[in-house]
Image 1 (tube, rainbow, N blue to C red):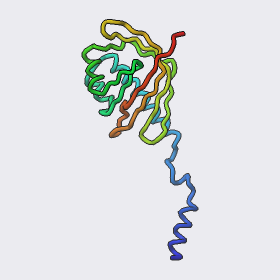
Image 2: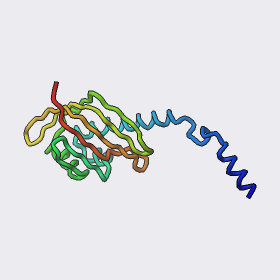
Image 3: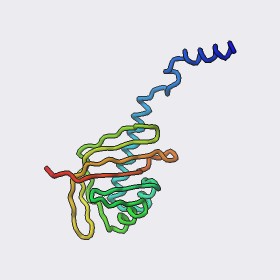
Image 4: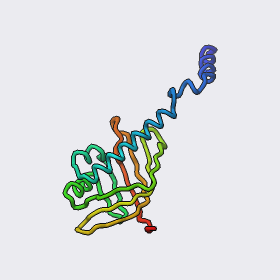
Length: 153
């Protein structure tokens, strides 16, 4: 019993820094850079409409809620983009912030100017958004998007 108590006491005396990663700030910065790169690839893929690229970036559980309230899954959104039913002409961020609130989860918030063509109509919107990225099998995948229209300046 005395040996057990001694071992437990030693565990509590180990500096917490020795239980952490060598440099958590560098690890966090690397993860944020990786998510930003994944988002850059996502916007490029959305503009190109490439089924292959979109399939690699979108999570199988994608929930994409448009500013109109319409909701797409991975399959329905890829179909719209690949067939040209919806075409993204531009996707210009005014502000884009990333945080990692838990391991393997990244949140992106911001404001973006989006130009699309849908149903033969060109639409220009300024959106406030929240998106969720999840680390799946070592790759950041786009899990969710929700946006609302903002008044133009």
